Each structure stands twice: as C-alpha cells, then as structure tokens.
Length: 211
Image (cartoon, rainbow, N blue to C red):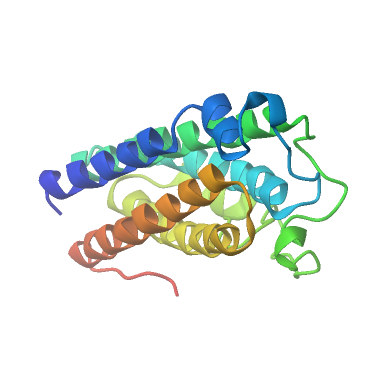
C-alpha cells in the first residue's frame, strides 16, 4: 500500500464533494431555480437515500476514528482519516438536503423501504442496513489493537463499503434530484476504488475480506 495511492483516493473523494457543489444552489439549480424549487416526497427514493446513507456514513466515521486510536500504522490511519472526513462531509450534505426540502430526518418506515427492502431481516444487535457492523463488532474493534485492529477494521469497512455501494447504486437508478444522483455515483466510484485498496492492505497482513 503506497502513500501515493491513498493520496489519490483522498483526492478523488474531495473531487466528488467539489463536483456536488453547494447544497442550496445545486438542488435549486436542478429544480429550475430557487423560486420554483420542487422538493421530493417524504417517502421518495431521494429522501430515503439521504436519510439511510446519513446513518450508514455515521457508522463508517465512528469505525474510522476507533481504528485511528488503536493502531500506529500510518497507511491505515491515513485511510481511516480520509474515509471519516469524506463520509462526514457527505453526511452533512445529505442532511442539508433534507433540511432544504423540509423533510424529516427519520421515517416511520423501516430503513431501506425506498429500495423495496424494508422487510429485510436484520442481523440484529444494531445492524440496520446492508454492510453495517453490529454493536458487538464495534465493541470488538474497540478491544483490539495493532495488526488485529487493522485487519478487523479493513474487514468491517469492506463489508460496509459493499453495502454502501449497493445503496448508492439504488439512488443512481431511482433518485430524481440530479445533484444527489451525481453524489451517489461518486460514492460508488470512490468506494469501489477503496475496496481495491483495502483488499491489498488485507493481503499485506495475511488476511482477506470476510465475504
């Protein structure tokens, strides 16, 4: 794993955020201007993705900051920092859109209903959506250190990214707000690249993804 490679991922992630543009301006622009802004419905794919991915991203941020305190490996710490910063920024954009649209940040419907997966069986113990770690897995990550923490984090984040990519692809297919679709596609592209990086980092540590 090279610093140059991690730096490229960070740069690509930053480009996604820049391309998405300002929250108010970009969404208004897609809708024909601020005076004719038409917000998506509360149960639309646009709103559902924004709500669910905000929750999904929050866990990625949490896991990334956990591992930064559990290892001194610079490559893992840099990757974790890049993931935390990128997903925290994207989460802010998603929540900002919900505010702009005047929509609630929580829904009475189960997570993933907007993708027709509201009745999906939970893994339980805090795992609400595809790829999310359970509370037990988070506690295990907090208990590990060094190489063990690095491997477990990379495995958890690999699962997390795969689930996130599935959700983002759903938005690309179903969302109607152009800037949100573009952000979702950027998530797919960046996280697929990070999956390759993490696979290489796991191999360097004599490990592999869990699935």
